Image 1 (cartoon, rainbow, N blue to C red):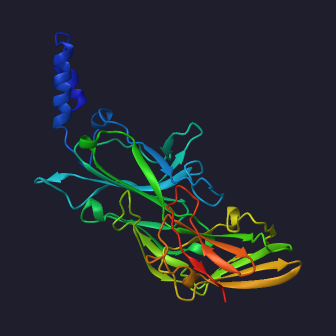
Image 2: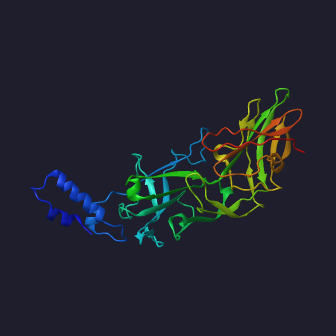
Image 3: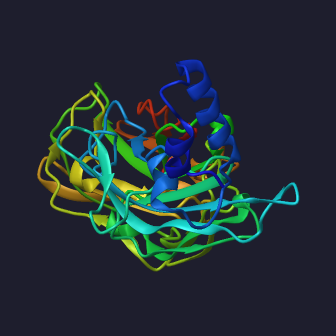
Length: 347
């Protein structure tokens, strides 16, 4: 392996710029991807840095993670070398759950306790990242880059944490030694209910609370199969005895639909086939008299053959009228994918 120290002895004032450039290029080509490096090796490399973004909803709330609110993440990174023309099964760790923070200048940097990392030419790199950094995540190297596994166990969706993750793979020389751009994906589904009063109805209607129950609320996620357009895998779902309870609401309804589950009351759910017993109790007052209507979410979602999918919003419309009904209408959050349902008359 050639090192910069050797290059300094080879080069002389008599060599023109073109010759010097050729020798430097040859030295870089001869430098191989390895698990160790000397000071001269890394001095010739390109610093490994990050950038990050997340889906931004046009009606983003204080609960959801957006590019503006994403200020840190944890990252695991490995690289593999070529052995006999194939990538080695055993990776070399580069980052092991290192926290990366965004500075006031908008640039991302990892903690001072982590040595500065540089790209090794000709190596195949894999990165897995997750936010928030407080999530108890684990990383398991696989037999190849695709099977490097990031996982989260027993995640409780009722805590209102917007779990997002990103993956990035590349061969350093073929794709250029540039910043690792991590595009974080929302791993949960969002459920919202909008409410309004039919113009033909008189009186004062005030929403005071909502309870959603009968859903799976606890599950384990892994990066298995995760790409730029897929979201990994959820399994081991449980927790149907838990409920999402939003109380203390004081939303006076009008003929214009209003979101009932936004801001600090945003409901994030595990992606799942909607259980038969999934329901929503909506409590409101009509001219001061308290009433509760129960919506069968399972029946209202009959057109959702795939159930709730990650990174999508499902917004049900609750309208108080002569014939009360719940309408599953087109969502309005742009950057989370849209989904729609149908009409259902509550019992």
